[in-house]
Length: 165
Image (cartoon, rainbow, N blue to C red):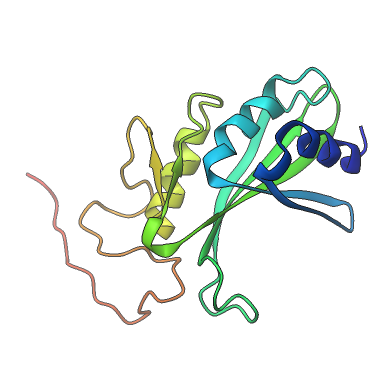
């Protein structure tokens, strides 16, 4: 299935909850309203024509100092979906404000989202509502802050944690 057909199918199914779509050099993306992200993800997985059975990646982007995005939402959570039987892919993006940095968890749809969401929480500080075990994945529990945020101080000293006896 062509990527533009996928985007048209999503727009037809969800109307105004798909905020925008774009196709740039073969990458097909849809910006999804945060309140509809679980519905859209479930539709992508369960629709017989789409059959996006693999969550390839779930990550985030911090647009704090990005030119042209100074007044928009600071973060985007990005889902990369792939269909093994149909051999097509799509990117879904959700804008997230800094003061409301949370989105619903996709662990119920794809179990691998557990690790991806923990990584995004650890690195960016975006929470996933309904996640079964949202704790640090890459940094130690006492680590202060989220190191992939653009405003994280590069010279920050972290507490030294010794071995637990």
